[in-house]
Image 1 (cartoon, rainbow, N blue to C red):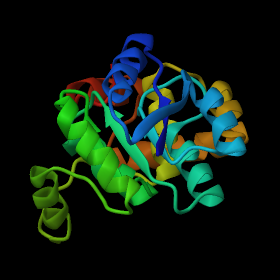
Image 2: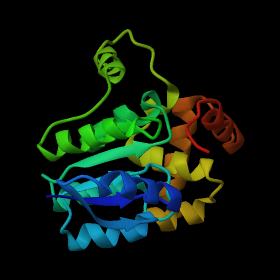
Image 3: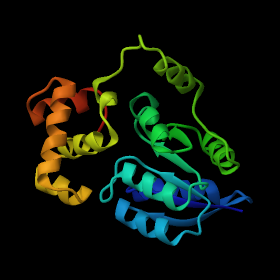
Image 4: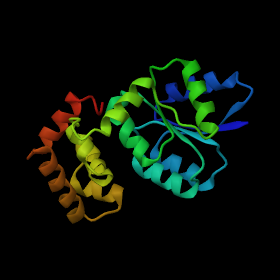
Length: 210
């Protein structure tokens, strides 16, 4: 039996996923979390076989959740189920350690297929994403500015896009405000920007956040 942990901040999404899994003889919903902090409790206690994880949630940052989950249960798969297109996040998520990436526009049959595949130790991405990953290996492939950021820098980038101040971001990441300020400076340098407003505009333009 595949025990699925659903992590998504939208109740209607969680309910829909539970309905999809309800009729399957080889799967059951182990638990559900509506924030990164709630998911952290499940990660610490264990008992699940696969985590269905959304990208944009309140509380603990998704990259931190992935890191913590993989440290504690390196063999348990994580499948990202996101509203954001693969080309925006899949590469970073795969590098962070997830085992598959699926958009919420996918058909229920595709979700079930993905869960079964990663539960058996496989990886799941679309054919289009496979081509993109191959393209990422080319030194001549032009890459979006946000993909040049490290994971820590990207977390600060996410905080800025959410309208959070340096103090709030520092508290969430358990770092000093001086360190966050240093990351912000690196982000500005890498992306050729000078104001938070430019970062937020870039994020909306590239469909990175709501």
